[in-house]
Length: 346
Image (cartoon, rainbow, N blue to C red):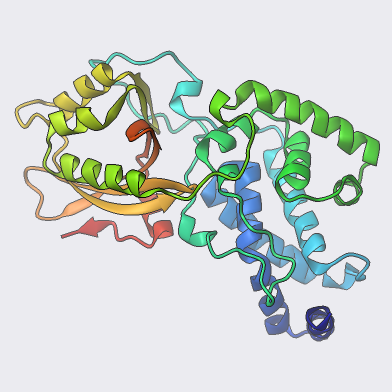
């Protein structure tokens, strides 16, 4: 109750023109709004932009906030509508394996910048979002609903169904609350949710049909990650092969190629790690990070004539039964600052 009184006082101060008071209120919700926009859009960069747009829209429209809902619900309404506007007419965001059959390791297409690729999300920007006395209304981020598999699956939903599913099944809002936010009826929200759940079941991996709370990263996963990083830095193909699951899948957007199976993956690596090959990439330096609630690495590469290691990719790993089942390496150096990482490593 005290927090609501404090919020009311801050809103009153903001309405009187105190932008700093409103900024303080908004910051309480920035992290969860960023995650919400990311789930809606599948893009970290666009989520950042729309959270800022939400702040500006809310500040300019504060006079229209009458207090019939919580400030949090009002901000979610603004953010959700901004996302729906941004998604209007857009193609869904994808990963390479959503577009084509597995690639031949000898093929070498150029990157595709005309495709809307999914992006990773740094764990450091959502992990602390737990309800607390200071932020009693904030939403805890369920790890499994930010994993890449979930993000890819909800991309198959039309924008409004996506919004309903996130509000109802991810955030736990009631049908009435969701209907109010979306300016719809309870019946329309329930119908959209039913259709969204059916579509989601078609596109989720079988292992994750039920999105029960997944366990935290185990010591076994951390050990696999350490061994993988060490093997890559030593360019030890045999050691890497030993860590890969038989049916491992690797993708590297914005390249539209992907490989399925240990033999195919190793064939592609062998060419890029061979100093005498025209496809030689260089030597790697690996930094452990976390993204989308999964183990991840930031990789840096140093070519034959380089003095330093340069940002190369953000790799998100799925580890199962002590082996790497999937690696999604986002070759986008613009993502490194989001992970609080430099673009050069010496």
